[in-house]
Length: 229
Ligand SMILES: [Mg+2]
Image 1 (cartoon, rainbow, N blue to C red):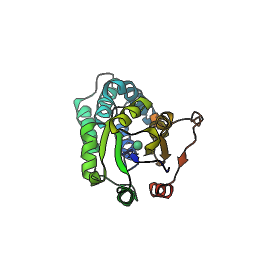
Image 2: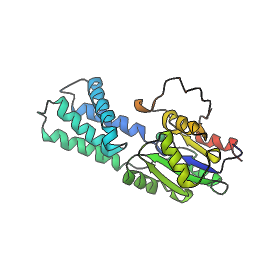
Image 3: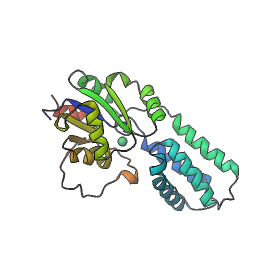
Image 4: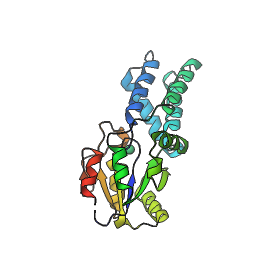
């Protein structure tokens, strides 16, 4: 880690809690449609729609809301009451208005690193929603640059590094997703540390095969300071 100059942090479930809100909303959504199908089947249809819509809507709550609406039509066979749609929209809006719950140790860690490193926030999701969350988090002042990415593939990281004028060997990414925050970063020759979160979206899960890459995994975000100067 001696060469590291720029440290990028993922936001959702790395700096603040996010995924549990999706789980809660999915449950409420299934409850709304329980007269039509059991929970597991509703979740399957919703997941199918979400994944199908990612190329069109990208990641984030707005795309999730549209996928829920599509799921209502599908599950009710286009016969559902508009009230179901209204309630679905309300569930999404509730998500957008959630308070920010920082993950323990985040603030102190950013404070301690901010004079020695250039800190970057690199997140997927809706631009406005992520900006709003960052603003609410009170963490904005610690970041030199904020990048809301439409995806986190190795080509997206290459673009980010080019924009930051940073060589891969000087770049360290910290995040909760092996698929989005670790593997694509290692693929371009940069460094990454995995900080798992207790809840992971199925779409972000990777099987045991990590393409032969080895990487550091810490149990809490505060621990990363042990590996830095
Ligand atoms: Mg994340």
